[in-house]
Image 1 (spheres, rainbow, N blue to C red):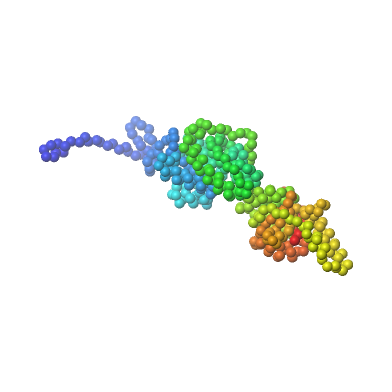
Image 2: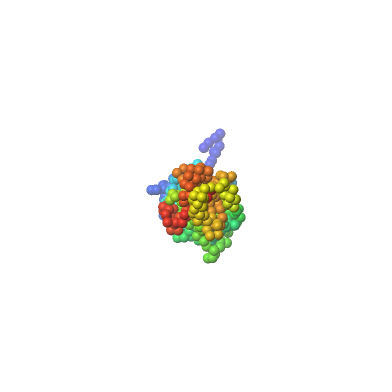
Length: 413
């Protein structure tokens, strides 16, 4: 090119663009075609030796959402441990899917398609499905599981419920590597402890552990190669299984369960399943647990002595009725038998005798929800000594009708 008699030169570089042939592969003379992934976008790098990581998240419930939120925040943070984040679920009708859609995350339906070379590590939180070995091998750093217990204690689907049900004083969160064929048996990469409050419910404990799980996972991801190098196998001793909560667990056996056991049962499953018993061959749901209570019937005998004298016939009739009542609600020592019910007007509760004391409930569900006073006035008080709360048969399941042959007790007001 000439300008004012001078030649302004520039080196001409010839750009040779490769020709794309079938399905997005690059072809050149003497070379094997190389497949691009994805075929419509930029080529992704292979496995990284350190963060940030390409992560595929497996999850379902609200506990999993809290961890996923932290990973989303970490992805947007400069210098964070997450470079890309996608989500796999078993169903579209779960909280994780709702959150992923709001955050515009890529969703994968189960079973997964081809994920070769697309992710560095997987993260599982409350997924509920065993992962096959062939899938685990597609993640260079394996698949991590966030488990809300101190493994090997409480392996399985419901560790938080069983922590409350058993009255554990300490629990925690474990980050482990998944192994195929069995749940929660892989090596441990990271753990943290949490002291369980005596009055904690399963829902409250889940919220606390979810808040602890997210930073524990981030710490693991930021130091993943070292955590894997320092991993430790689970101890063969101390392993306890935590199966799913079943409907049969909601039945109360008044003769066998203590006040403490009923309290733990309510705090463990009460938000998901009502505690149940039977009354006149009908299922009664017990709600609004009010704790243990002290019941004394000592004053009732004194009040009877102050009653005005009755005729001989009436006295004999009342004496016979009192004898029958005593047999049904008391044992040889005079203690009320398990299942006996007493309406406490001052607290508007139904007190029920169990193995070692009395527990109280503020309401029941029969055909509809009834306060303790409504149930007493509309049902117990009107039956004049009809049978009251009865334990279910030992072999009953959640849907088996109550057995008529069990020992029955009488309502005491």
